Image (tube, rainbow, N blue to C red; front, side):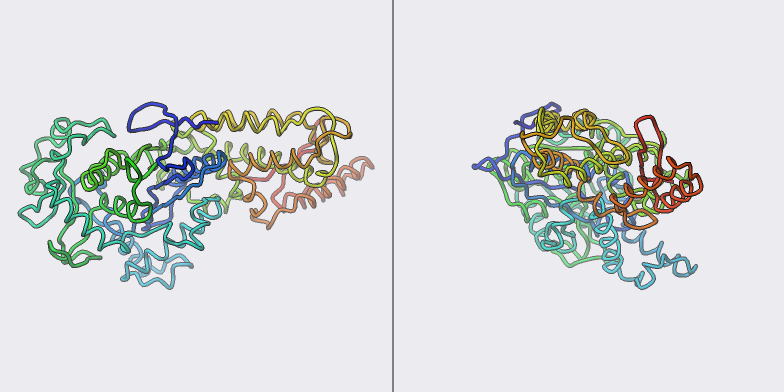
Length: 522
């Protein structure tokens, strides 16, 4: 099958064709977190959609080399500005930790951090991010255990950044302003604005004629963007031909992508991903400086962007109480698998509304899938007559994902196939009588393939609720005991078992088709 994906650069759906002459190797760069705080679920929606794209490519038998950066310098608080305005976010983290230490409110896991050491601060938040990312099944985070270079930090790439600035100066794509700052000259690059749809004139108008204001005075055009900022007072700084200072945020990703993924036949990489808010100015500037330096027609052949996440219909804000990290949701009883599914089940090019009810619904889906998976595993040597429902569904599941990652369609296909198995308190039953047809092992393999692409298979096995690890066979056994007590009208024992299951984080529901269970999300 052929993957068709929406390309932000061309504003249309395109058939995916990698640059690799063998047609199998795919180079993929994702803009990752700025490690000055705990990542929130809005951040993770973008990262997980990129992971879903990667898993789909691997389902299609591509060999994906995936890099995700972790920014530890140069990302300013005014990230929509192009001149380095605002404060470095690592400085924000330093001040916040110093204030917390003074007030005695440092989180327990942060008590050993020296708030005056920005590298130690970055280390702390990198580890926090990796912990959450691995819990949610981010493939590149798992790979980074053996290959840490797949999740690089800009502070490790300062020398090649300086070299890239030199190249851009030599090719007349950059200039040194009177105040010593090095800027990229957007008028030297004819395609500037192609990715975002901006024009130089519209950007000048948006700047409101601010070119004569203090922070714009040194620039030749309001849209010219920072490559290197001399600043001997900056929290993190390095020597350079233009004075001691630090690199521009946009410069960093170009260098790490080129250093770690090389260059293809007509572009540096195949795919570049990020959140919708990265399109401008961040990705627009990356594209311009990379093509300016390499002379190639593309930086990335395909640009993949995830739209925004709101929570309960509103923009996330700590003051509204709807701002969640992964850890905060786990503390409410959510499983990593349910968090992942809830963040990815809405199409990546649509805004998503994260709700606690949606999280519960996602958990019920996963519990249903897990029950069938456990039953098929126990019965995989048994032959079946009739249809191979899940094997047939796998093709349609793949077709849906090949249609611009139509994950809702893929989940629908999976649920339709599973719905033809009877799933009750004693486990699922076969849709056909035992016979001599294909064994359940093939059905199990097909189910696991689909759950692995969705990213929930291994998470569900490893996840735990607030009450501890979930043993599905124990739950089924307890429900059978409860059903026996109910049949004997031993209501006290029945209630005790229900309460015991609730303590384990499991809710039971009695219905005409038997008793079903699901995890409790508070």
